Image (cartoon, rainbow, N blue to C red):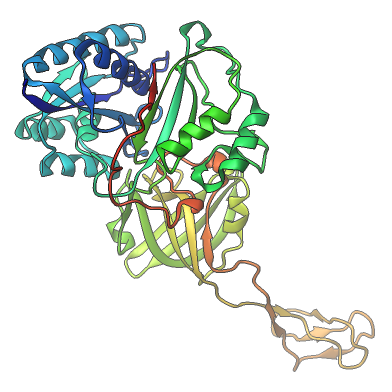
Length: 449
């Protein structure tokens, strides 16, 4: 009997503004590797979304890991084949910004690689650090351009086998090359019908506020649609309910850290916040919400260590209306990416969601009623008392009356509409569905062809 080994393959930065897609190359490799080398996948392809705040990130900042058993004697042949296929694929979508890379690991995923992956999701990792960790972890790296930035994602994808935390699934279907750049032909009514049938087993399929489907991306990349859900069975069932009106080249199911909030770093004080991280921090509203040009809503959050601005941007729609209802003194926990200060604004958290913990009483002060005729009096001036506009009665000994205004904002968690969600943000319908163990078995048919 031939000896088999585990081989992990990490891919990153395969896409470019001109087209191409890391997941598409991964899906093509899945089919060709099975037919050419008779390998045996022990997991779905892992789609690992990295820190969404990195200024030089790719479109979705996603890397992919393939994990399979292969005959030990064929490992080098498999590696050579994958590198060759990747070079051919990247050659059709070259762009100066792209720095594609591939990583290979034989055996088990060690703690160093797991640390690297965790850091790449939460923070900034320089290629030099990734290279050192990869070398110490026995990872073999290949860069496919002059740059080496892709080695971060390729190594980090291998380092997150999704075996110790939450995960979801996404079925991605790809177009035939003749249709790249053309409008995507998916029957929208069928997507709404699918969403209603599937309930919370899938998520972020549509945005009912503006009656828009969200499963189709934009741009020239090969992806036709992506359906996200809690299980491989759910996304496959949902896919079969959608009426696709153009040819499908292939489809594959990915296991992923999407919609898990895995990018959020909980910090205990505002002073701990670092730029380009995604953080969760608790504090009090110290400056009331204000609307700035462009329709963006900003308020200031404070704690004993300092203060930071929090922004709900115009694309977040009705979420801004929630933020506008905050008052000075309200206790909240905010979640979002940290934007560096500039000449125009201070350190800012771009809000992804907000927990309203406690709201203060809102009190306004109204002018007193006239003791003679009951009309509302007007101030004569600071320290000069009030005068009735109706009967002309004057009084210096009256003062404004405090009136409690009922707060419409209640404690709870508030999120933007689905169209404003980024890949890693956890939808509210996922709360309570978190997973802690990988799947026991895979679907018999999880990709085509």
